[in-house]
Each structure stands twice: as structure tokens, then as C-alpha cells.
Image (cartoon, rainbow, N blue to C red; front, top):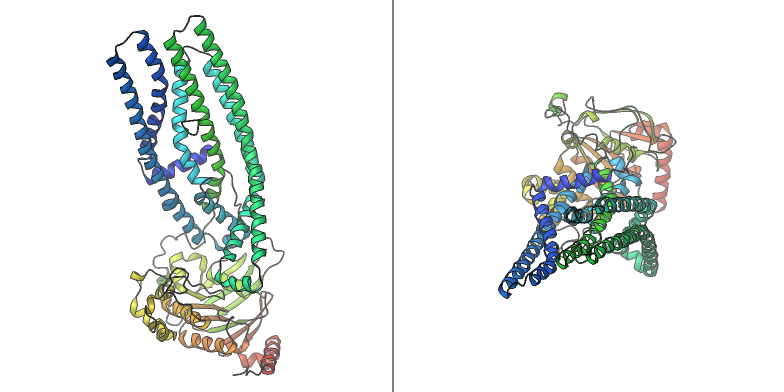
Length: 623
């Protein structure tokens, strides 16, 4: 598996973020430029007011002149403050748009298209969480780094202008201040990166556990066990321990940021003592008059503000520190976004008519499947889950795939869905390797119902069609519900097919039974009308009779389709054209139910054991 967690140069990340901002709104540089100039001029005007006042007093200016000049300065300061406030709002609004309208959308889209095998892995899940945190956390990633662009810019502008002003009076100021600032930034960068890198894994692990336990504690489904077994205190204690661990880790991380701040404070103290000493000596020596002395005093004080912050907000050092901190969030985002997508996600060239060219447009009799010497091994595993598998399925055949737990049946289904990719061998659809199909065309070929039922807290219609209400084909929807034998139930509800499934988002939603949910999923598969239907134990939570009924209904409605049924209850799949007994990733037995029973092999023994179990319980396994 490809490396997931990557590190990018800080300047590269800043450029990446700014480009995203610019691509969303080309006026971004203008907003930041105006805000930077206004942010610089407001304190600059405030800094020169005292020296201007002293100058007019020394020149014995009349009251109207004095008042007029002061009024101009005050109004100028006020206007710059208003401009700063206005553009702060505009920039924040645009930042929010980038954060949740662009970045969030891209992350969600990536989660749904990234290679499934990566997403399913622990590293992939953690990478997805890191990408989500990069835009959802206010202190990290996109939110904070975008907020820091403006103070970084106007503080840098202030430092440059004030340095130019100070050079004629204190020519040594530029090299001394530059050396001090560069050393401090280098120290800060090194210490901060080391701190976050050291505790990164602990932070992620703790945050994931907190989120997991929070979701489970608020789940209505889990609420039954929590109340029955009095797990409330245990949940609270676990959450308390995790939060305490998180706080302890963050205190350690903050210590890494405290050290460069302490270093900056010491450098600033030394710098200010030198500057004030030189300035006072020049004043006492008569080289500066009161006006000039006051002016440079304000400039030096302002210079300290540009570097370290204060009444003007975050200074350059603080803004730089925050942008270094946020660098890790951008690393997480970029690392995740650069993961490879599913092999089908990227459209192949000239594939608009792929199906027509290869015969898959003629799907009234299903499609053919073939596994040729297929091997699959999970990353890090020592042996194959599927080894040298060879299997052919004719168009329109109904195949049952049975075997003990862990035989690799679900893995085979995921290979057919294109979620996994063989390490060796080929999987062919109508004679063409599945990786040659585009995402759009291949997904049209496959319909599946899985063991873990996926229903959304939206309307019945949207759950069946998997589309927004306005895009649903109503006649097709009614036909699917009718064939799935769920139409009467749905139409008996006040909102009919617009009734929400579950009451999670809609107080008027309905909690359907397990069998009813299965029929909704059956209707979903029928609505899609794919030529290949995969049923991976979708009825395992139902009783044997209910499972048999639904499987027979699937069988009746899947006529003309190539269908693969997976079930632990062998009696439910007797109707299939062929039964494949699957063991250790290989086909051990292949034939009809009667043929396999006559062989008296592994399938027959498993069938007899299950039959004996159900007969002892008073059931009728063979019917």
C-alpha cells in the first residue's frame, strides 16, 4: 500500500492554500492587500500623532491648526479601522466559503472515490479523519492558516516600512533585527515541528477514540445495551480518561510552542533595550529634538508590536508560529487527497460505448463472469485469502456461494464489485477485464445487497432510487416497490414514498422492521436493474423462513440476470442453478444441490448438520 502520511515544505503548503483561496475568488489578493494596508496605516497614524502634536506645540501653532491636524489624524485612524473591520468580515466570509464549500466538498468526494481497500485500512481511516479535522478544527489546518494570512501580511508590511524608517537613524538596526528574527523563526520552526511530530500519533489515536465512544454513547441502537447493562458510568469514565489524556498531550505540545515564544520574548527584550538606549543617548547628546525623539520612540514601540503583537492583535512571530502549527493540518489534507482513487474512478479514454463494443449492452440474459487464476492477499498478510481461483459463471445463472466463516466469500464479492484488486490473475466481465471499464459503465453492471444494511435517514423513495427526489423515475419506483412487495406498506403511510426511513432526521420518520428494510433494499436493486446481482448474506439477521422467502423472491425477480447468492443457511439457496462450496479461497465442490448431496462431501455434511439442528428445534429445514 502506498505511503499515506506525507510531509510537505511549509512554503509549499502556504502556496497551496493561497492558490485554493485564489481559485475560489480571484479578489482574494485584493482583499488581503487592502486589509494589510489599512492594518498597517491605523497603528502608524497612531504612532505619529504624539510627535505631530509636539511639533505643532514647538512651532506655536494656533488652536484651529492644531485641532484640524489632530482631527485629520483621528479621522484617518478611524477610517482605517472601519476599512480593516469591513475587510476582516469579507476575508472571514471567503475563508468560511473555502473551508466548507470547497475543501469539505473535496474531502467528502475523495472519501467516496478513494480506493476502497485504502479507505478500509486503519491507515486509510486515520488519513480520512486527518483530512476532515484539517477543515473542521478551528485551531488547526485550513481555518487557522487562512485566518493568519492577513496578520502575517500586514505585520510583514509594518516591519519592512518601520525598518526603512529606522535605518537612517540607526543603520545597524536592519542586520541586527534581521539576524534576531531569522534565528527566532528557525528555532520556533524546529521546536514546533518536533513537538507535533512526537505527539501526532497519540493525538490522532485519542481523538479517534473520543469520537468513537461519543458516537456509540449517543446511538439509539446501542442505547438498549447501555441501559440494560448499566454501562453509563463505564462510558463516562472512559470518556473522562480519554479527555484527560488528550489535555495532557496538548499541554506537552503547547510546551513546545512556549519555548520559542519565550525565546522571542528574550530576543525582543534585548532588541528593545539596545534600541531605546541608542535613542535616549542621541536625544541627550542633542542629536534629536523632542519631536524626532518622540517619533522614533513610537516607531520602535510599533516595531515591537509588528513583531510580537499586542493591541494590534497577533504579531508577525505569532502569525508565523500559527502558520507553522497549521502546516500539519494541510499535510494531512494533501496526503489524503493525493491517495489513488479506485481503478474505475478515472474515466478511461474512448469508453462511452464500452458496453456496446463488448456486448454488455445486451444484458437481458445477464453477463458472463470468469475468475482466471485469481489470487488476493490483504496488505501485511502472510497468505492469500483467495488462491489461484478459477471459476466461470454463465450469463443468467443463479449461483450460490456457501462455506464456513472466513472462507473468503465476502472478499470475492468485494473483488467483483471492484473494491479490491487481485494481486494476481484476472476477473473478466463478458470477456473483458473489469479494470478496463470506466467507473460509470462498470457501476451500471453491478447491483449488490450487503449484510450490513445501508439505509439513509431520507425518504423511502430516495433510499430506493439513490437519487434526489426530483430526479426519481416515479413509474420505475412504483414497479420496484410492487415487485419487492413493499408497496402496500409504503402507500399506507401518511407521506407514502416520501416517508423518512428512521426518525433520526425527521420526527415523522418510520422505524421499519428488518424484513421491511430488506424489501426496501430489494426494491433498490430492482430499481437499478443491473445485469449482475450480488447478495452477500443480506438476510442474516432474519429467521430462516423469512430468509428463504426473501431469497426466493430475489430469485423470482432476478430472472434474466446473473446472480450470486451468499448464505450460511444452505436450505435458502437450494433453488440455485449451481452451488459453489468455497473453502480457503478455492472452489472445493461445484454442482446442483442434488448433485452435491449425492457426492456426500463437505457440502452434504454441512447441510445435514444444519438440517439436524433445525429439526431438533422443531423447524422444517428441507422445506
